[in-house]
Image (tube, helix red, strand yellow):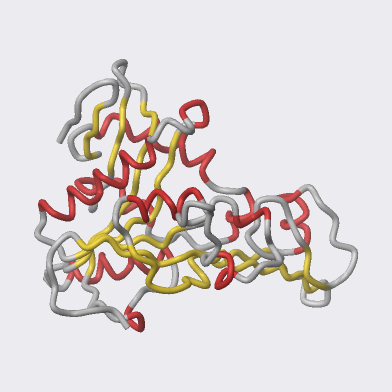
Length: 256
């Protein structure tokens, strides 16, 4: 699949030679402190699910944006939503292994090259994912959206943050707003899209901070405080998100 210039959209299956450039985008997409999260099944995105990984290139074949997604069976209830990004992939793999036909496409990430921010490329990625869901006859594209400004308000509960509005009534957070403008609805809070754990020394290395005593600490880039337990030599951070749904096929069922 391709779009008009100045960018072109492919799947990784169509352009497997672009995988190294996607990995470069990974380096800019996640904070270092998320290294402590399990990413056991991430490699499957580059082979098993390559036909659902979105790659956006400029006219010179430089990757300027990319998106990861996995199909799986979802019964459209909130209770059946996966807990973490890794669980989404695991469920997709299990469904494939047992021959179950997926009903839903779940996004995992949308990444834009730092020098190409604010050009609307994140919307290009989301629309491409929607198109892939339509092509496969799936009911929905669901997204565990990671609000991009929440880290500026780490003490505000996510439940309140997602209700913030701008003067025109649109969502306050730019990433939530991208999905909202494309017709997505908020389903619920995703409290633990990734759980990152490590020793105190690891957390000090990841953050460049010192943690002299046990307690909660606000760290740069984190959506809420990290919990440090010096007695157990353990730091733990649960990265939250917001489940949103793009309906791409009429359905008689509703989440709830």
